[in-house]
Amino acid sequence: MGFLDNTSTTVDAILTKKGRELLAKGDGQFKITRFRLSDDEIDYSLYDTTHPNGSNFFGAVIENISLLEAFPVGKLKYFLINASEGTTAAGIINFSTSTITLNAGQRTTFNPTTDNVTDNAYIFTLSNSSAGTIQGGSAGGGSNTPMGTEVTARGKTIRFTARRLNQDLNATMTIEGLQSGARISIPLAIKAAPAGGVKA
Amino acid sequence: MFQIFDDENDVIRDQIATISSGMWSEGVGNLQDTTGGGAHTSSVQSASNGDYFVEVYNKPLTDTTSERQFAIAYGHKGGSGSLGTIGATGDRVTAAIYGQFNNLINPPETETFSFKGNTKSQNDIYVITINRARLREKMDPGNWELRLGASGSAAQPAGGKLLQLIDDSSTNTNPNSGELGVEFNIVSGSVAGGSTSIDTAADSETTHGSYGFFYPEVGILILNPSALSGSHYHLNTVSASNTANNNHITMFNAVSSSGAYTDGTTGIYFAARREEKVTSNHYFVRVKNKDFNFSQNPTYVSGSDGSLKIDAFKGNSKTFITTVGLYGEQNDDLLAVAKLSKPILKDKTREALIKVKLDF
Image (tube, rainbow over all chains, first blue to last red; front, side):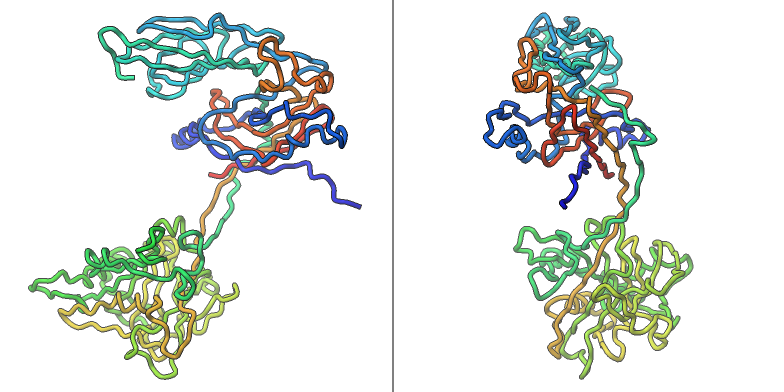
């Protein structure tokens, strides 16, 4: 006779900065309806198929690590996804360039594709709204977006227009495949306008 | 990839729980004179507005972690016990205090306090106000006890007792609801060991009236000096005209270590709990056997072609869940995040149920 395995785990969640912001508005925008799972902090190379105690212990090193507490800033980095049985390759996002440099007012289009998996849409996250505006996609980057904040938009493609800034600014555009969970980050370098512009 | 919660079965919203904890700094429930902590004053505060009230700290001010716990003031309708009279210089601070709390607590056109058991007008009061940061939402009725020691050797009657004050919420089923919320009477008794014991009910305090009023929602205790100077305690309240009698310091001495009772009785303290309501949402994250068995972790798949890096996972992919991200329906911003204490192994033969609790 032994104790049964307790398969239910109870954890406390914390609000992110964005969650607090929406909750404070009190206009009903704060309503959690979806979840995603992540394996951030896991190093799968620690999975040891030569463990002397057998297959039950192949993942023991990973299972026994103590995880960090949740951060109120940032986002999940690597997602767990559904894949049909026998899948041997994950989605890989293709994008034409690895870095982008834009002058004031210059535009570029983000139109990624995915290998191995079909992505119906992508989540585009601009790390700093001061860098520019996003057109197209479902949301984000409008004129009401506060400068210096993170902006997200969803769609197949988006256009990005660099702002006229009085100094150079570096930012990042992260692209996540909605179905594949794949992600890439593309550094953006925005050059200051020759005659000056708004404060970055 | 996103999974949508079944709002009917997976989400329980707005569960309200009442949480109580020790009211003093660091969650301490007992502000005691004998073991560490205790009651201390600040010479800086005393020099600035110390005529009006005395701030009580949990530790000596030389300790950088000391924090304000509550304040003590004395009020007199005519200004006795403080410098100044009508038509003369002086701030008449006791009159200011009395008027201030009369204005806050009593109904319009009421000029004096009167206490349960004897409704005569009481021209002076002691006030204890709990610091806002300590109080949070409210003081927990029925779960505080103020033990007063001697306020000065001359004031102690032979054979006198330590005075233990509590509220009458355990028996007062229909308390007044006044300007500052629910009002309970302060009576002699104890809550030691978690059970309330009232020595004398407020109605039976016919000589001087009850020991005072207690307003849990604002953390204010109004004490009746006449009752405190009664037969078995004898707090030495002095109210001379145009004289700074510093009665609030007398009361501080009674709650601090300097007021240790002359008969050697120990155990002078102010024990209290606070109470707050916490609203929680519960989300049941149901991870089915065929879901979430693949990862985009760079140690799991190759960045160049997406192929699996671990041969053992081919045909039997496994993942380890560490984090649950919660999202709204209008955009893809992460609204809340929950971390597991240990990774959960997931493959096609395992299901997981993770209950996520989000407090507001």
